[in-house]
Image (cartoon, rainbow, N blue to C red; front, side, top):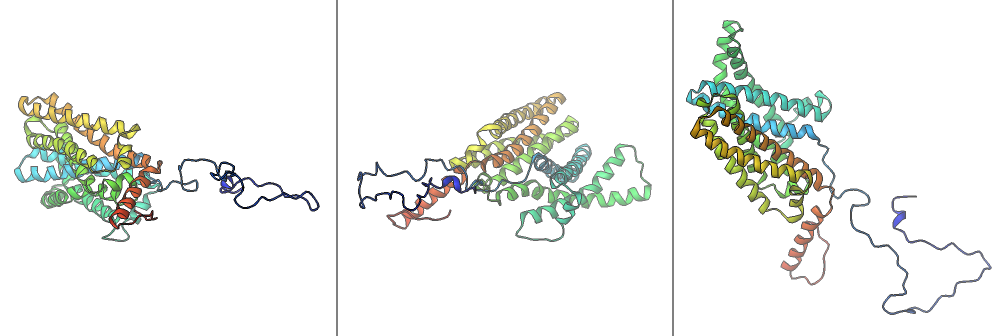
Amino acid sequence: MSEFDEYRPPQEPRRRRGGKKRRRGRVGAGAQDGSKEERMAEDFEFSSYYGKPVVKAPPWEWPIGGYLFLGGVAGGSAMLAAGAQATGNAPLKRSTRLTAFSAASVGSVFLVLDLGRPERLLNMFRVFKVTSPMSIGSWILGSFASAAALPAVVEADALVGGVLPKPLRRLLDKAAGPAGAVAGVLGGPLAGYTAVLLANTSNPTWNDAKKHLPYVFVSSASAAASGAAMVFTPVENAGAARVLGITAAATDLAATRVMEANMEPEPLRPLHEGTPGKLMKASEALIAAGGVGTAIASVTKSRAVSVVSGLALLAGSACTRFGVLNAGLEAVKDPATSIGPQKRRAEARRQAEGLTHSTVTSG
C-alpha cells in the first residue's frame, strides 16, 4: 500500500459477468444540494506535505547553540580587548584576550561535534564564496582564532610567571599588538555572522527575522562579553566592561522587541511558546536583571554584585541564542508558519493587481 492509497476513495468490488447489472440513474438525479452525493475524501487538516514538513528541518542540535553563544562571547571579548589595549588597561586586556581565544576554541569544538568528524571542518575552507554566509563565516572563524591565539599565548605566559624562552617571548610581544587589533576587527563579524547564516535559510522564523536578528545577536554578544569581563576582571579595572554591559542590555531588550514587532504572527509564535518561549522569557529577565545589577555595581564598586550581574548577562545571552535556535527547530513542525504569510502575500498581490479571482502564487 503506497502513501497515497489512504487518500483514495474506497472502490466497490467488480461484479462477475452475467450478474445483475447496477442500474444507473440519469445525470443530475438525486438531491440538487449534493446531500446524496458520495463523499470522495474525509475531512482533514493540512499538517504536512505528503507526509513531509513544508520546510525541511535544519540538521542542527544543541552543539550549534553552544557555538552560537561562544562565538558571540569570543567576538565581543576581542573587541573589548582591543579597546583595553588602546587605553592601556592591562587587567582588562588580559582577561578579555584569554576569554576571546578560549571561547573561540571551545566553540570550534562544539562545531566539530555537530559536524561529526573533524575533517569536515577543514573541508569548509576549500573554497571562499562571497555569496555564502557559511563560507564567509568559516573564514572569519579561522582568521579570528589564528589572530586571537598570539595575544592569548602572551597573556597566559605572563599569568604563569613567564615560562617561554626570552627570544620567543619578545617576538610574541611584538606580534601580539597587531594580532589583537586584527582579532578586534574580526570580532564584530564573528558575533553577528551566525544571525545572517540562520536568516539566509528557508526556515520561516529565522527568515522572517532576517532584518533585525543580526542586531539582536550583536547586542547579545556584547552583553555576554561584558558579563565575562566583569566576572574575570578586578572591579576597579572593569569600568569599560560595565559601560558596555549597561548599553548592551538596553540594546538587546530593544532590538528583541523591534524584531518581534516586525514579524508575522505565525513565524513569531514559536518564539513565545514551548521551550523556546521559556528561553526567550528567561533571556529577557536575565538581561534586564544583569543590566540593572551592572548599573548598581558601577556605583557601589561591589565585586559580588559585579560578578552576579556578569553571570546574569552571560546566562541571558545564552538563553537568547538557544531560544532562537530552538524556535527555528519548532517552526518547521507547523505548516502554518510557512503557509500563513504566503497566503497573505498572495492575497495582497491579488488585490494590488485588481484581480477578482483566486490565484495560485508563491510567496
